[in-house]
Image (cartoon, rainbow, N blue to C red):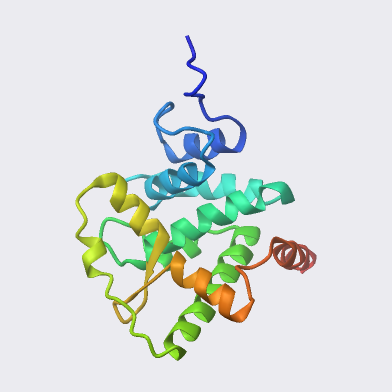
Length: 191
């Protein structure tokens, strides 16, 4: 019997979880943010050979504008994970080499946004915090949340979602708009 509060992920959530090898029932489909986090964590692991299949699903999802936010969330989680330089996770360059054309446009848009956030944050004069304390968290669920919502800069300092929100409020430039991504994707398809 299916319990009403424990629905199995369907549609794009199920596609992403299946391609990442995440067990059915371990993630609630109602929380697409959690679906993206879990799929990104699975795909990023070096021991998991699903990265190519996962990125193929993301590339397919990006054909439908209604799936952009979902796909971008996944790609941002994957970028954040790859930024930490952990031996158990794939690097950004390893992942970039496997991206399809649509995913590459989104990856570059996200990278550009986070560079702007880092530059703005450096200009505030408020020192950034080191990432090291977050990397030492032992609780698995908390660690997944922290590693996917923060990124490590080359300096060993961290940027997180709070920094992005502060940047958006201060500068008025939000995370790349999906309409901008749609334009970039159409442009890439014409090349």
